[in-house]
Length: 133
Image (cartoon, rainbow, N blue to C red; front, side, top):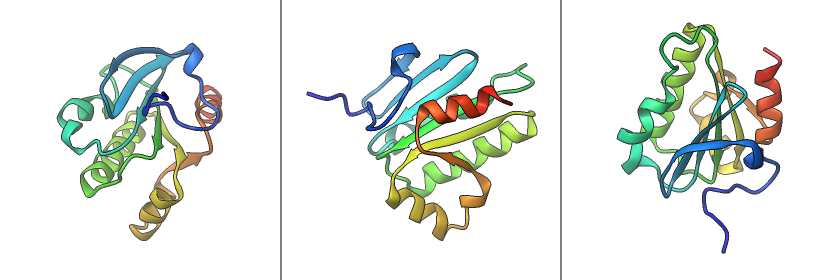
């Protein structure tokens, strides 16, 4: 049986050190780049997940990959993504979204938010992009 937090496509799971997970998200890091992998409806877990979207204090170049996968993008989740993006930019860092399903892209497009985010196909590409910054 497959793990619902394991997305389809290319990802860096073999090298990620996961330090927190639930049924709808995993949080880990690789080479100083934080990774959050979402799945399903994360709304109920936003109080737990939310602080992990913030840039770490004292990090002058915070880098975060958010693997959207098949996560349900509610207004609460979208608001958290926008806030995280703004905080990372203000701190001199960057977030990259990856593995964004077509339905999620449509939602972000309708909300006129696609230009805010760097969106790549998979975790490997996202990590490589952030390494180059």
